[in-house]
Image (tube, rainbow, N blue to C red; front, side, top):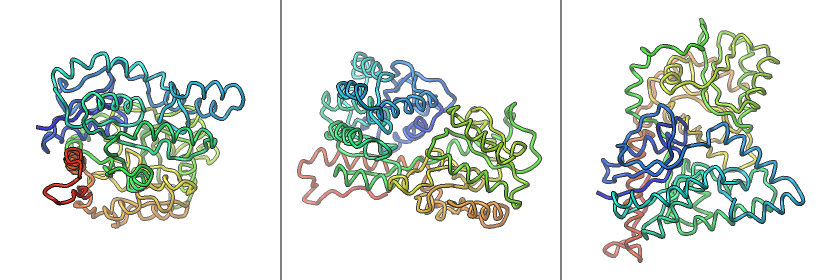
Length: 450
C-alpha cells in the first residue's frame, strides 16, 4: 500500500468548501492503493471525518474562519494600496510575511505558528507512518506549501500542490509591483513541485502554461455516500429560523464575495418580474456583515422584504434538507469577463448540487463560464448572465426540461470517480519520479486521461 501525506489546513469536521474538497475525497483513496495520513488543525463542525482519526494529525486550532479570512483579506488589500512608508516597511518583511493566499501580499501570522507545531511534532507521525511515497499540500494558506517543501526535503519524494484558486497568477486589482512580487514568490515556492492539481480546465491550462509541470483537473465533486444519506434528510426537523413559506423558494447557502454581488443583484431584479412573483428566496449567508448589509439594502430598495429571507448559517444536514426542498438552488459567480481565469471559477458548492434528487441549478456567472458545459451535459440546470435569461429560467423551472438528468455525466463528477482519477495521477507522478528519463520499457509515460 502506497502512502500519501496530505497537508490541509482545513479538514473535517470543519464545515467549509476547503475542508469538503479533500475531506470527502481521501476516504476513497484506500480503494485505489493509497493510504492517507493527514496533517491539519483542530476544528469544530459537523462534516463526516471519512478516515480513521489515528491517520489524522491535528496541530493547533483552526482560526482562519471564513468571515475572519474575508476581513483579513480586505485589510491586506487596503495596506497593499497605500503609498509611502507603510508599503516600504511591508516590502522589507516580504520573505517573512508573503503568502500565496488572496489577491495581495498577505501576512501569514494566523498560520505561521501552525508550521512550527507541525515541524516540532512531526517525529511522532514519521514513527508511525514511515517514509511516504507522495506529499500533497492544499493551498491556501501558503503555509501548507511551506510544510510540503519541508517534508519534500526531508524525504526526497514527489511533492504536489493543489490550487483551489490561481492566487499569484490572478491579476486582480493589485498594483503592478505587488502583482510581480507575488508571482516571484509563488514561483520560488512551487519550483520544486512535481505537479499540480486544480479545480477547472481553465485553471489547469493557465497553471500548465505558467509553470510547465504536469497538471490535472480534479473537480470539487459531490459525495455519493452523503447523497445516499440525504434520503433521510426529510425526517430532520427544520431550522427554527426557517420562514413559514407557502410559495416555492430558491435557495443559496455560502459566503459572500464582492465579485458576486452583481450576480445577486441581477437575480433579485429578476424576482421583481411578474413571472417570478410567486417565488421566494432563502439566503443562508456566511457573511461578511459588510456584504450582508449591501444585499439587505438591495432587497429593501426592490421591495422584496416579504419574499427574500436572509438567514444565519446552519448545520450541513439542515442546509441539505432546505436545498432538497427548494424549487432551485443558486450559484453566484463573477459576471465580469475582464479576467480570463474567472471563466474557470467553479465554486466548491456548485458540484455538490448535482445529485439527481436535488432540484435544478441556476448558475449566474459570465456567459462563457465552464459551468455552462457541465450543466448542459448533466441537464441539471442553466447558466444565466442577464436578467432576461434568469427570468426565462424561472419561467421554465416547472416544465419538463430538467426532469431527466444525465446520470452517467453526473456520476463523472462524483467524489469517488474524482478520487479514482487523482490516484491514477499519483501513480503517474510516482512513475515519473522513479524514472529520470520518463520512460518505462522504452515507452514514454503519458498523463492519465481525465
